Amino acid sequence: MNTAKSLAIEARSLTKSYGDNDVLGGIDIAVPEGSVFSLLGPNGAGKTTTVNILTTLVPADGGEVFVKGRSVTRDADEVRKRIGVTGQFAAVDGLLTGRENLHLMGSLHHLGKAETRRRTEELLERFDLGEAARRPPATYSGGMKRRLDIAMCLMGDPQVIFLDEPTTGLDPSGRRTVWSIIRELVRGGTTVFLTTQYLEEADELADRIAVLDGGKIVAEGTPEQLKRLVPGGHISLRLHRADQVALAAQALSASAFDADQLTVQVASDGSVRALRALLDALDREQIEVDELTVHTPDLDDVFLSLTGRVESAA
Image (cartoon, rainbow, N blue to C red; front, side, top):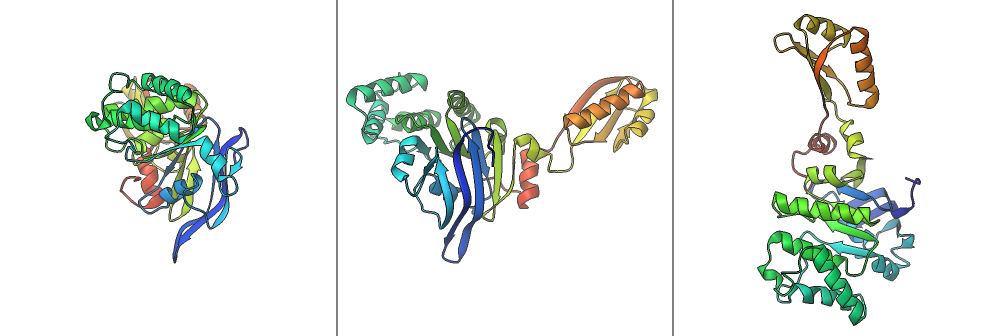
């Protein structure tokens, strides 16, 4: 467990079964406050079940779960006061106006009328929905509906937000708008638990990623740490002088080189230590380099390697 910062979410030996189907087989999760934690996994891996347990919607069969130090079983009401949840489909009422949707959430959170109005106008401005506030969400674009959905999630001023595939169905511009909102929330101290079918999204946003497969967490770490689990990383060099290509290939134990293109490729995990060793060798042999590029496997490679599937992390 990560103890460097206080944990916003902690699950210990979490298990869940439905009949003979073991959905979760004793997983541990630790999410520091003010960070983004992303849970990836193929269909049927147990992601939705995990989120449902963490948000008090489904009881676990075994293990313990704490959100902001409160047990989800013994202090479920207190946990609900501290969290916000959005699903992959916007949970807005298409008949109410945008402003009325937010007022409804204020009532559900037992906010006073004045506080509800204050929070509503603040969130409409924050999410650039002021001009659309008088219209029903049925007239909104997909990105606007998603922004309203997240705004509704924030009406209770949650400390922890669970985002279940928040950008499903959005175009690239809409996805990047939501990414910007998530980053802003984290800068303000909010903790975000993210599930996503877009590996690029986890790579962009997450401080730590866990890969869930068959009810077990098969890998966890920062995006860069996970990428180093997969072979295939290398450093590409383009040299200044053709007469140094063979020398560089020998000195660096190159995996490939091309004398005509003045290029040399060296297997590497892309770490600072490996890069420093390579630079030292180049300096020692006085090899002149015009260009150096570090290539590491991406999360698609990691996902395929760990789960044996080529499908997305949906």
